Image 1 (cartoon, rainbow, N blue to C red):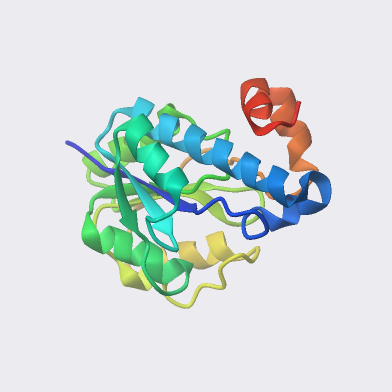
Image 2: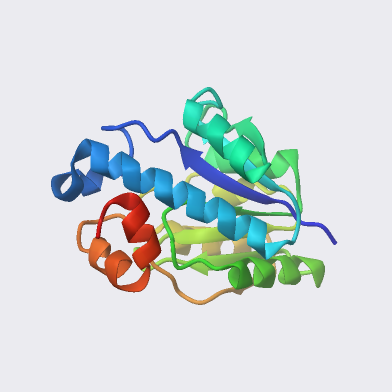
Length: 207
């Protein structure tokens, strides 16, 4: 069973991405880290080998970096489109489901995590989630499009995971959860990147 992996990413524009890291890295340094995280996420998705990888781009596919990624990794690009994060994620599943959707902020996410999510869908489960320490999630897999799962969620807050669990329960979804992981969002997260992912730290200029 082929299950696409959709990687959600913003264009790595200085001053517009990873802004909470700017006090530690500056705007250019934050954008450089963001580029490295996108490339790592694409490599992880491809290494999982559960289906085609698609890079869903915001605000659109025009940024040269996205074109470079398409050529380097041999992947398809598509725009995320308009709306809040929930509307854009819902649209991605409406385009293709079953599918696994990931962001780019979690270097601890591995091909094994993606395979576990894909296996859950192949076994007939409705969904899989990988919780994040900040109260969100770093992966969501759905067997079918489900706009209600994304409706009315306060994106970026600490209750995203809890709200998503509630919506899945209301939809009678059978969902499995993967191990708790962590995002790179705050200056203190950079310490873990340097300690656990030296190659990433080198690429991002953190070493």
